[in-house]
Amino acid sequence: MAEPLDVYADQFQLSTAIYGATLNFLVSSPTPPAPGTVPPIERLATVRMSLEHLKVMAFILRRQVLQHEQQTETTIQIAAQALNGLQIGLEDWERFWRE
Image 1 (cartoon, rainbow, N blue to C red):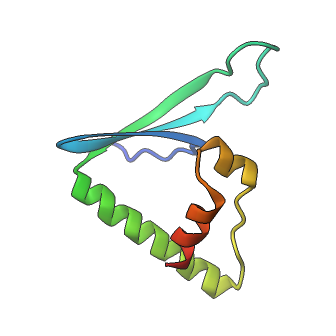
Image 2 (tube, rainbow, N blue to C red):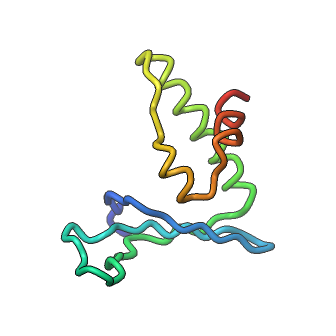
């Protein structure tokens, strides 16, 4: 059996097709890139799963984050710049976390 993979990722890519989903977990370089160049990104892991698995995982992750916030009496803030970069409207974000 393969050794478990234990990594930190600060980026991900998700692609879906009719039969499944692929998640690539990535990490950016710790050193800043030269001006005008694209920062190097390293792919750490690829996880493939069915669309059903992905949908159930999304539900469980949301529920887990909400439970964490309730238990710690905190709210995990996401910067508006991050949402804009992901093309997520503030109203969509707020509705997702209220439902």
